[in-house]
Amino acid sequence: MYEYATKGTCCRRISVELDGKIIKDLVFEGGCNGNLKAIRLLVIGHDIDEIIPLLRGNLCRNKGTSCADQLTYALEAAYKAASA
Image 1 (spheres, rainbow, N blue to C red):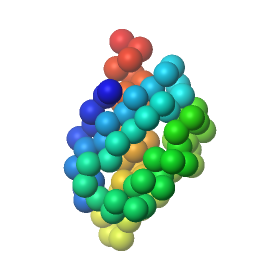
Image 2: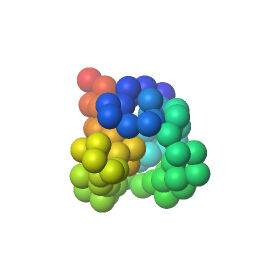
Image 3: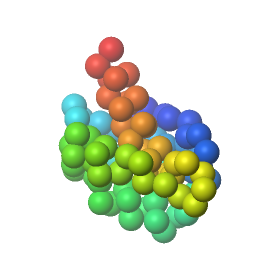
């Protein structure tokens, strides 16, 4: 599983497991437990190229980012690391 340290969110880390570009599993550490469990269930099994445009730029309060927005960066980083 690829681990991504988030920036500017209550969630501290996102662990991502991909199968090619398909999201196989992910775990959020910290943050709003119920909301993040729901995001996990909604994105598992989907292609990162489908999820990234949907969630990128989703902002939480005045933070300039959100857990969903940070997930898009985690997905990109996990795919890049797996492809290297």
